[in-house]
Length: 101
Image 1 (cartoon, rainbow, N blue to C red):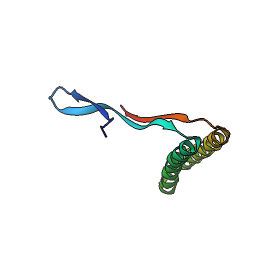
Image 2: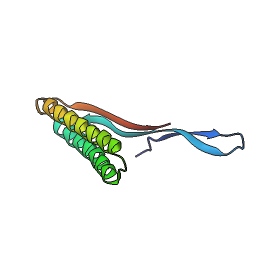
Image 3: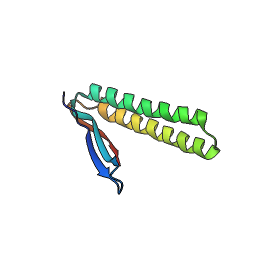
Image 4: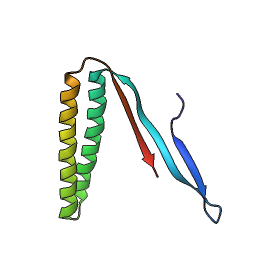
């Protein structure tokens, strides 16, 4: 399997090279509704777990509230996606990537 990561290198005035941009393709394919829901659910659960860990480490109430709000939004999004995919019979195209700039 070939790598899908793309990395651009920038040289500063002292000729030190550092990455300036990277794009990592996580998902790019055709999936059944069940497979799509499984992938999306797992990704959202990882993100929710990340926010829950940050809440445990939070030092301000503002940070806690922001993360709780984000968790609720992710849960609503997952609920909506689940409803849409449960009523779908045909395959789904999924694409997901991470872009570092």
